[in-house]
Image (cartoon, rainbow, N blue to C red):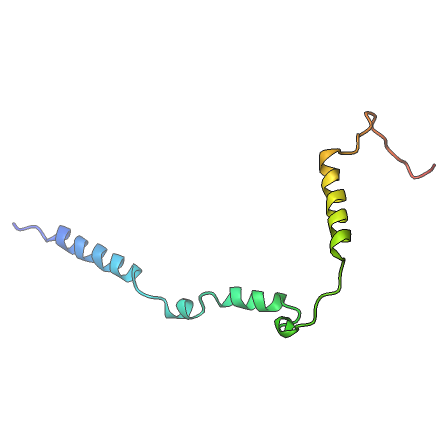
Length: 92
């Protein structure tokens, strides 16, 4: 009595399933990256801002340097914290 060929049939079935997993997804591929582009566009307030050549009004160089040095000092000498824990109940 001859046995049915289960092994070759199983191999063909598994190969066809594996090949179907490699098929392209045209609906997903056509929209790939569109959500990121839409999110970027929604975050821009004025798309024509790059065309404006007027200088930005702000601080002069000396004031900006002094402000930056004062900002850096806050990291070199932090304000000391008190040792006691204070809980305020709303009345003083």
